[in-house]
Length: 472
Image (cartoon, rainbow, N blue to C red):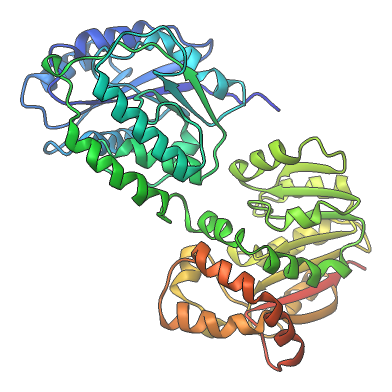
């Protein structure tokens, strides 16, 4: 795997009544060694402190202009709210959380960042319980931490040893892709759940921990432990863990029979050398990859990287980043010379669909087919379409007309998923639902055999239209 390049680490700190420790902590942060070529910024958010924390922060900013950046919350809103503010203000392409005391040692930054810098991970937790030399700490505090970690692991199917650790490092892309809502210490179970739901590449490294007692300023208490139980359940089953498109793709994963039906509907037109555009989470790539030679493309690295990790050793598969709005990216198709280019539920996301079809015509070989599935019927256009980033649902003859205008010969058009049209109308167009849930898709998956029969015998249009064309 190619080693990614990063240029700046954003160290994110929430400070509440830390006037006694903040100077020493920031001094340690600034003097900590970083990997070669990595600059740093320290983003500190004052969470409505009652002591002189803000004045200390102002002095630090003056002493280190451009390196320390400070922000003020209007009132005490909690660690989670302060961290969310710091994330919104950061400018680095890497981030790590740092408490504003001396419980965690900044000299361990390089060790924590190593799996990300090596290209093995997008998220790394530093564990206080994973085998490092450690300070003896409060027994019941440790018991609660381990219980909460166990419960989180059970629900999220992970094996962290320390969910509540402060030291969490991320690529900026991963961190900023997760919508966060917690104000207090619920930020820890929220992030842990959403990291798992996003299926980021996760690592854990052992760290040392110099824990404080409550008489030394420790702020988390039993109420936060009880609240964490609720947050573990709440965020495990939340659909607000990333953008609507990714959530929908994850839900569709719960319908393998439906995905197979979609694949079987286009399979006769694909040939041996198949290029899939907009492969997403790989729900349909799982079928396309069984063809003789296959190219999987997407414009998002967070989709491509997990597929590379999963299937990268398969000799018939290759992967490439391809943004369909950038003409130069299509050169990979010229080199691959596909028998067919297939993209399902993709073209509606691109405003200038005519340019996509023209770029494909200019870059695929003669005889190559395009096999395209798009949503059908503007009367069904809903808030969910908008949430998914759809510019349109296609009308009768629209896709085929645009194919002809680009130079292709249309071979066939047919409708897909006629039963789904009624469900979409009541749930999304009338009901204004803005998401698909895994439960809905499991039900749809169960009913797929009946829907396939309905498609064969029922007249009329479908929820989607499929068009097949060929370059002369």
